[in-house]
Each structure stands twice: as C-alpha cells, then as structure tokens.
Length: 133
View 1 (cartoon, rainbow, N blue to C red):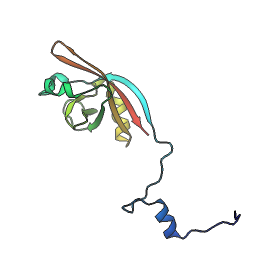
View 2 (view 1 turned 45 degrees about the vertical axis):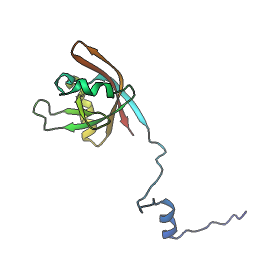
View 3 (view 1 turned 135 degrees about the vertical axis):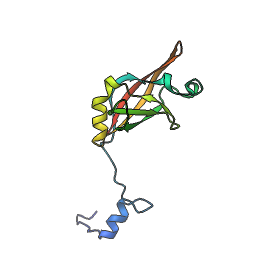
View 4 (view 1 turned 90 degrees about the vertical axis):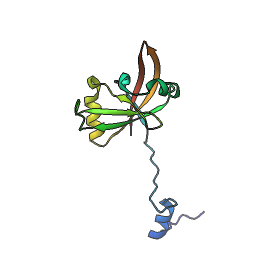
C-alpha cells in the first residue's frame, strides 16, 4: 500500500461526483424528515367527490403541501393534495401561520395521513405534518 497522495484532475473529480445526466449528485448525509405537528385536514366538506376519493386515501399516505398566498379567505393558506395530485383540503387556519412562513422561506413541508373516519357527512382526516431537511 502506498502512502503517497494522488491528485485527481478536475475532469476526473467531476466525473466521480456527477450523475448520469452530468448533474452533480452529492450524498446528503443529514437529510431527514422531522415531525412537527398533529392536526386535521380542513375543508373536506367542500371538496366535490370526497366520497369517491375517500376509499383511495390510506393511513400512511403522503400528502403534498402548496402555499396559496393569494387565497381570498386566508393569505397564509396551505392547500393539501393527495398522492394523485387531487386537492383534499387545507391545513387549518388556526395552525398554518408558522408552517406558511417556513414554506415561504423555502422549507419543504408535507403531511401524512394518520387516521380517517366519517363523522356523519364529514370526512375527518387526521394528519401529521413533517419538515423535510
């Protein structure tokens, strides 16, 4: 075994860390999902076809969050879509102030269905909110 250092050329180094399409693909050793909060999905009663969507939503399903700063009812609104990209409601207004500020600062938040049940004609969907770091 040699104790000498080997100097790589810049092209050899870029080949080592680049992906197939030439983009840089460095490992992210500290990437993780951080649990922040338990809440529900607000507004499910206003979603057309929620009765047909409900059987396709399972506990553990990931939910995507989208900021709606121009929402006429709430400028801190965060829309929630299921895994198929269909709107299922919103993060409740009483809970969304900090989360909307995090998203506006470029942080990636998402949800996960923890439980769901029908309460008369209202679909109650419990979710967990996570920060992806």
